[in-house]
Amino acid sequence: MIAVDTNVLLRYFVHDDHAQFESAKRFFNERTSTEPAYISLVVLAEFAWVLRRRYRYSSAQVLGLLQALLDTAELSFELEDVLAPYFSGMKELKGDVADHLVALSSMRAACSHSVTFDRAASKAVHGMELLA
Image (cartoon, rainbow, N blue to C red; front, side, top):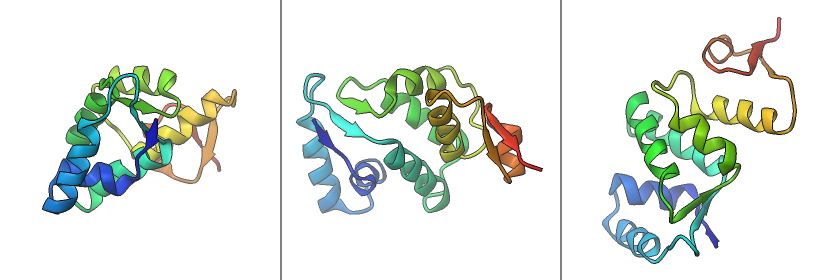
């Protein structure tokens, strides 16, 4: 298994650098279900953030892309056993992907919840509570 950095994943999807897109495409085409590419939570969070902020993807576009990635046999994800069901069942992405990943990671670590000063995250993300 080979891990993927955010910029490789981005080049593959946004096609903003032809040479890097071709390299990324070649890399991903060589992956199989028995030799997948590995995507960490940090890479996934950064990928979603850059898509939203730099490339102006909508929340729906980011969610659709995350769901498609998680359904790809040639990719393996950190905490995939909880990540895939969490995002695949989601109809609408509320809040930042990073906040969802913080909550998921915390739940996986047997925490009752995560505390935050981010009001929007506390309202949008299950498992995030406002620290007052």
